Each structure stands twice: as C-alpha cells, then as structure tokens.
Image (cartoon, rainbow, N blue to C red):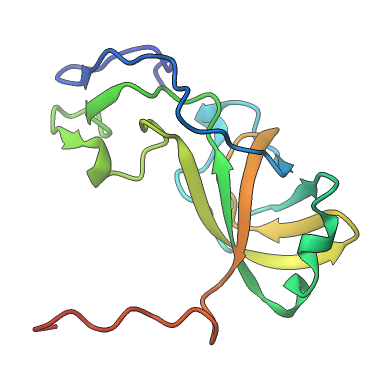
Length: 159
C-alpha cells in the first residue's frame, strides 16, 4: 500500500487551510488489532475480530439503554487520513472517481462509519464486531441501528 502522502497517477488534490470551522468533541477511543492502514480491512465484517470502544467520562450515562440493540452505528474520526484529494484512483488502474463517490477514508472531513454488532456493554466499555479502523481511532458518536424511533425515509417517486 502506498504511503498516505503519495498521489497516484491521475489523482488530484486541492490546497486547503487548516480546518477551524468545527469543533468535535471526541467521546471515546476505539481499540482494534490494526496498527497500520495496510492491515485494516477495507470494510468491517460481521465475523471480524472483537474490538473494544472505550467511552470517556462524562459520557457514561449516555450509554443507558444501548444494550437493547444488537447493532449500533459507530462514527469515528479517521485521524491519519489525507484531507485534500478530490479525485482518487482506488484500484491503482487509472480509473478515477470523485471522493464523494467512494467510501475511501481520504475525505475533506474524514468521518468514518461502521454498522457493528454489539457483543457486550460493561461499564464504559463496549465490545463490538465489524470495525475497520486503526487502533486508537477517536470516537465521534454512537447511534443505534434504525428502529421505531428512526423511521426510514419515504420511497422516492418512481421506485
């Protein structure tokens, strides 16, 4: 895997200022077996290894009721990712895609998401399966899988 600063043939980057327009509050840390991006799975798998999510205080009470769900959505900050590519060549084959047409970690605001299986919740520690991020990744948010409180969007006309 090329290093994260390498631009592949045909890829295009843009000049950006250091972002100062948003303030995220990391609510925890994700612990996985992967130390290098090259070792991370491309997408999490339901049968992947158990990983843990450590919630920081004072956010412990926000976990109340989460144990009722089998699946949760985890949002995390891809803190080692480039943020300047607008065109990417993910397969190294010369075929270019816009960043917003990919699930690449290289994004203007590198927020990753994964729908994971909740294996256990004990105190401030969640055990999950299905993650695809580096060890030590900052946690942005957790949401339960769609449920009665989050209705699906109505169908689009003609679908």
